[in-house]
Image 1 (cartoon, one colour):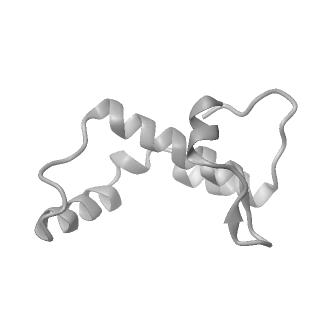
Image 2 (cartoon, helix red, strand yellow):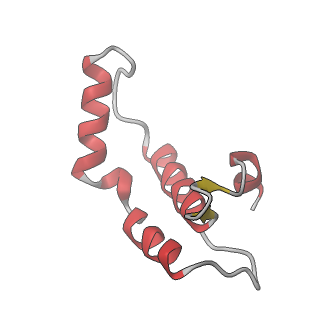
Length: 82
């Protein structure tokens, strides 16, 4: 995820973005997928391109997160357009 030019965010959000880098390639995500498989919600791990898209959207959500309001100030559709 690369924010548009001139867009800034809070330091807290930047730290969240750093933590979100590579989330779908870590063990945590594999555990989430395994749990979803055990409940019958998923059949397998998402393809690589979809995992990259999930990573980018997660970083975008962290970028637009407002900790005071405890919500994201942007929709998934707007993030995909960005």
